[in-house]
Length: 183
Image 1: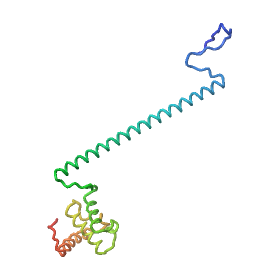
Image 2: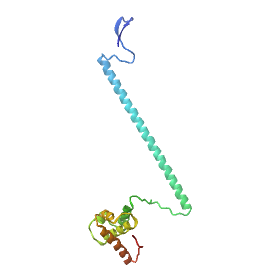
Image 3: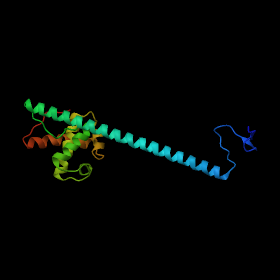
Image 4: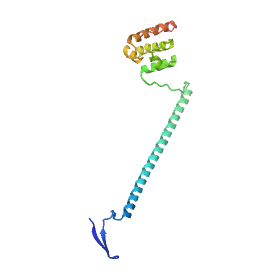
């Protein structure tokens, strides 16, 4: 609530307002107040953006230092292993995916055919051998049922999987490479 205040020097009566409030009757004051608020908002945005950029730079520096420390540890471990007479390879061994997916990747690599060809209806010798390889090792090393393996092999029947498993053993024997009995 505004009170009337008398200024003895100027002998003027005007409304007195508490400290912290601005007399917004004047359009110039309203405009100046809006400019001040905009400037405050801009400075706050710049401050938070600057803080964000500084934080990102700090995190990037920490990540770089961590990478350097890991590389130094790897180099020390490699030199220690070589000094002990170990053979150190630079290619990592990566085991990802399910056991069936690893079998399929191995077949793709060994037989030089794509996954889409393995799942297709084509019957070329290389593709059939790759399919039978997958069927044999999937039956032998996974807990998947024959219908599940057939479904993963492009929607084949369980009897096709059973035949493929048996045919692979026979083909390996004809190459003078025998395999142990499987389930």
